[in-house]
Length: 283
Image 1 (spheres, helix red, strand yellow):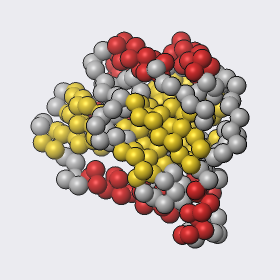
Image 2 (cartoon, rainbow, N blue to C red):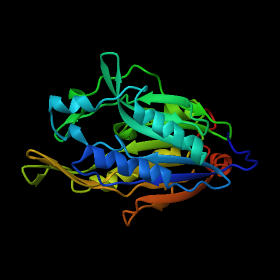
Image 3 (spheres, rainbow, N blue to C red):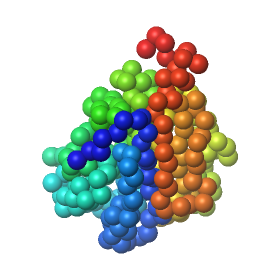
C-alpha cells in the first residue's frame, strides 16, 4: 500500500552497478541490491541503469544474445514484484522484453502493491559502432509515457531518448513532474582506439541539464559503470548517475561509483521555477 504523503517530497534510490561476464551472478547481485534498499517515510522510487542485470550486449552483433529476452510472466518479474511489496517501494525495471515474436528495450514501473502501473518501450534506437541496438530491438510504436502515481506524474525515457529534444517536450506536455531515465553510456573503443568525441560526456551532461531547465522538470539519470568488452569493441561506462532540479542544476552526481545513492527531491519547487523562468507558460 502506498504511504500517505502530504508534502511533495519523494526519495529516489539510484542503483549504479558494474556488470560481470556471469549473468547468473549479475542477477543475484541485482536482486540483492533491491532487497537492501531502505525505504523512508516518503514515497521511494528505485531506478537502475539500462538493461539492469545484463551486460550491454548491443556492443556487438551476436544472435546468441537474443536468448536473454524475457516475458513479463517470467520469474524475474515475479521476484521483483514481491520485493516491491515487501519493501514498500516503486521500482523502475529496465529489461530486454520479449513480446510474441518481437523484442524491445523496455522499462516497467512496479508499484508498492506489486502491480505494473506503466510500461515504456524505447522509441529512439541507436545503430552505430558499439551501440548496435537496431540488431536486437524492434522500434516501438508506443507513445511517450507519463504515469500518475498520486503524488506526482512520472515521465519515462531510456538512454538514447535523452539526446532528443522532442522527448522532453512531449513528456512536459503530458504533465510530467519528474523524469526517470535508465541509460548505458560511456567512451566507446574500436580495436583499442576511442571513437567517441573527446568531450562527449560534457555534451551528455549539457543536453540533459539544458532540457531539464527548459521544461523546469527534475530528471534522474541512472547509468552503468565499469568496462565491458566484446571482440574488438569496448565501452568504458561513465557511471556518474545524476539528478537535476527544476532549474536545470545538478543536485547530485555519483562521482565515487557508489552502488546505491539516496536523493530526496522536492517536487513543489517546480511551480516556482516555472514562474521564474517562464519557459512553460504556453504549455
